[in-house]
Image 1 (spheres, rainbow, N blue to C red):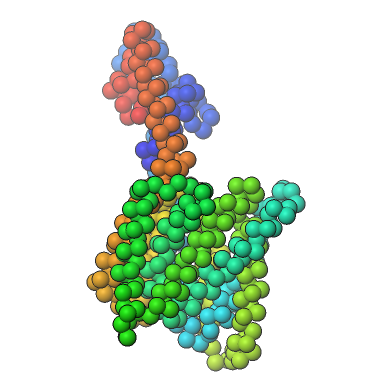
Image 2: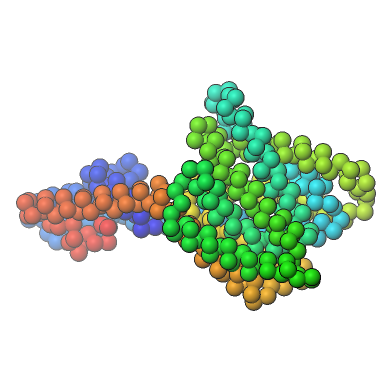
Length: 402
């Protein structure tokens, strides 16, 4: 909020204190007070300042309300993902993971197609440079789509949620290996912390025990997260030359659906539809519509309006929501050691998120906005000293100046 307010005031000052939406319902009055007749009465100055600041105050209130809505949307998105993990767990007792995934993607495909069509409404024809990325993206995202349900059936909804915050960390590592972003010391600290937290949360050390977590389960869980991370890295690289992320998502998902449907054919032949309860079909529909369409659309809408690293931090909410819902509906329990592992994992994620923020456009824009405000304030001070006009720090103006 502070950086956004600074950006707003910097732009307002740069345009002669004009209001940020392009009209002059408030800014011009402020200029008149600062550079007006020195003989004007204090009451007149105060009244003019209050009238001039009305637009700024309303603008700031709308800005704060918008931030509340954006953050609330990210909460809802993580809740939807958590609900999908929990409800699909029961449905997987009646449907194989391949069948569940095939139906889920089939339901979500029309929504992805609409989004892709809108994105390329005025775009040129697809080139070979775009198509070369689609197949490897399909392999990565298809593996992630399928493994999330395979792991859910084998390990439970809670463990699937435990590893989701690892995705942005894996993305940072893969990006650094490919030279897409630097691998700073803070990122290294974050990766190590996430590794320790994940080992504890998954109880990966039990792979050496007879009745503990199996090495196969740990491998599958990490395969799911790293597959999606690989897709994100490829998408990031491809969209530098071809800025159509929704088109890539649709095409990759379409190819992945073909492959998953082919794998599911033996199970589909044996499937007795009448033996599948309505609740299982409801979970499939929710996964297809709620997750593929609603959650991803809301997530994209919110990401465009908040700091770029916030969705990474909010991934921890998915873990909390899943733990609560799994305890209520699935009778799954979380040990104190797993809770500690989740906490340590989120600390590591925050390290990586902070490092990525420092490299992002948001950090540079915030720094430029603060510098612009400071420069404008210095210029105002110099002008006030030479003209003996009332300062912008006059008590009547404090409420409407940064």
